[in-house]
Image (cartoon, rainbow, N blue to C red):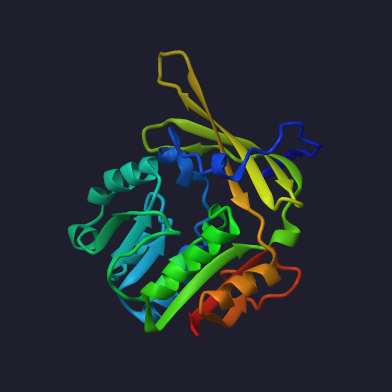
Length: 270
């Protein structure tokens, strides 16, 4: 990601209810800009814990599908209609045995009941989309309810104290198999008092065929995330009946230190 400028942003943050993740029209492109270094990390812990695995806020299957290809039975829980459509579109591309191991569930991560226990539960980077404290606690309680007695819950958090307040960025272009080029740029504004982050993203999709003029389409979406500080997260975890077994500062397994902008918590039932 290339930072192209930082300044005070004049657009006011909306209410929490309005800043739900916006994926309409861009679910096909979202994973092009994902950092997939977390996938081997989750595979490693799945091998330690075994099946079944619950992937919460699974998106289009970015993590769930590789886990299924590694032989694990995975429940992929997702709320966004666009992401669910994209995940179901991609599922048949997997080898049949892997596709058969994926169960897609449409549900809100703060209010779900699947009726089974899981050896491993993960929320890869999306917990902050539970915008309010009540929804965050409800999400953790739902996890606790579905965690097997010897189960492990991996919670991936962006450290609130280190988040940028105002940031403009542009990411390297990505190319789809059909030749289309996608460029993503955005603006982030963080209100540290209200603990809300607003993210305005613009996807520029370029389709250039030999002998034809360039066709360019722009899609703009707005979403938000909660800003969660460490002591706040620790309190929510205790209130939900969970306990921290370990905490890491990166998917390479480095210990967590105050300088780390990522806090990966390994949690068990208390």
